[in-house]
Image (cartoon, rainbow, N blue to C red; front, side, top):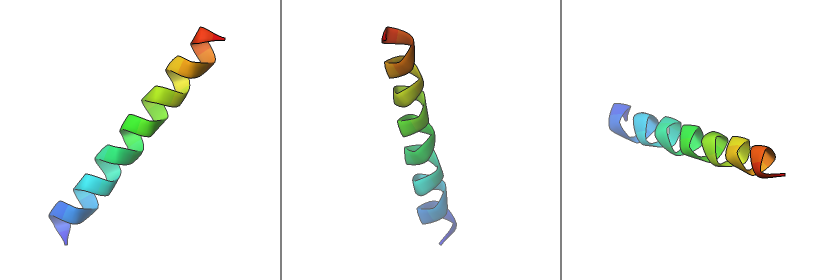
Length: 26
């Protein structure tokens, strides 16, 4: 369960970073 939770958290962080880069590009 911990590894799965960590994976979800990592994916969420990656998505957040991508969104930030997208806003900066605009």
